[in-house]
Image (tube, rainbow, N blue to C red; front, side, top):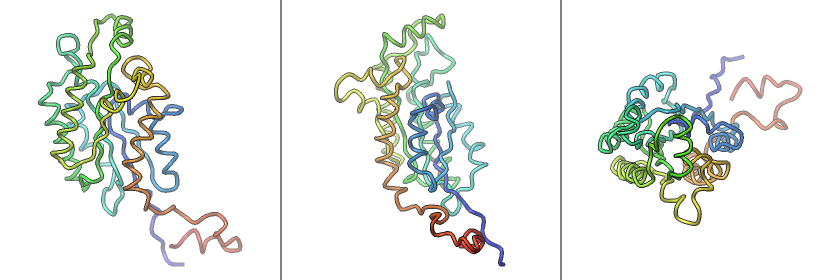
Length: 240
């Protein structure tokens, strides 16, 4: 029997901070996306709790070394930073990134992706969500800190993310705006910053609308079980 090609699952890479890292928890938005893409893509979680766009820019080339972007191996990448960048400098200087630098970092991330063969039409920026200051202040006090994030400041970073996406030709999911558009946005947050179950569902539904257009044509990998030749499964499973 002739040698057959390896089976290649295209990859969707989720790159971001804790909101991405936590997205594979039960009912998380990343887990929901992975479920929708079962047998079509591997959804890879590269969320790094506490990280900002400055550190992301340094790390991304190393992360991409393990993923072959040729032949469509990387089908999509989400870039979800800003919640830590927007921390107040006077209270949390370690995570804070100035607004203009954040904007430039987001643009640089698209250049790094493009140099690895991931074109802008495969990239989706996600803005930081809104901040519920009273709830997040309680979390800060428990950790011995003053309130270190403000919703209005998070909004400035969200707007910078949207503008950078437009300049780079990538799609953007503006959570900061969408979550505050209708009703009480606090129900989308578990602690004033991170997502509740309803918030995870919100992200999953809106992100899927952007991903579906790119990924719905991807084939189902390997034959449906009823189509496997039971008498000689090798003839079905080892060759195209």
